[in-house]
Image (cartoon, rainbow, N blue to C red; front, side):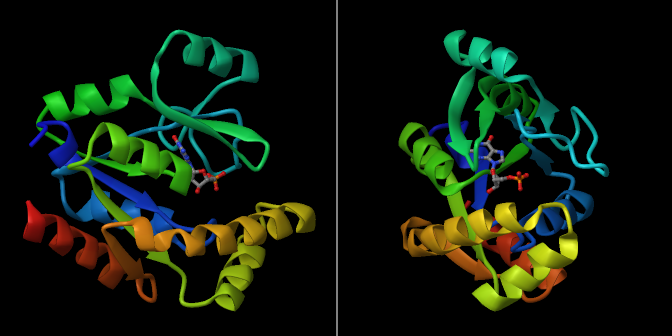
Length: 187
Ligand code: 5GP
């Protein structure tokens, strides 16, 4: 098994399914896990910290890094670039950590191509209605962007069967523990 691949956990799920909260819970309760901090050209949300939640880049900076071969994978999602930096993965695995990537479906498929041993998990919302309720409650996107993300969500749900596991997020702690148990079970 590839040393890097078996230390990667790739988590996807529609925007608003609560995967970021689930991942925060995993990182806070189990020190073996660290986050791969993605680069993005999306605008920073008020509660986000540059370098912690994302590495926020201009489009020009992002394209420069694509040209420099710095990304393991990257994609355009709802009009913004997102990408996993190779350095995030390689450096953290070299430090003995299990690296959690929270990325969308196309990125997950690309990581699985490079690292077939990576564990891929799809976090599903209880329903699309509940997803819409969570997205509206979050209040970080306007109506147009919410509709765009809901459309994307139904597309993503259709691809969930290509993941190693699907975990429904009804309760954050339970969902986080299921992911840790799956990792420990197949390690
Ligand atoms: P958000 O704008 O809500 O933070 O993220 C939008 C989507 O982009 C989410 O599904 C998130 O998981 C995904 N995403 C975040 N970082 C990356 C990345 O590095 N690569 C890919 N492919 N998707 C990402």
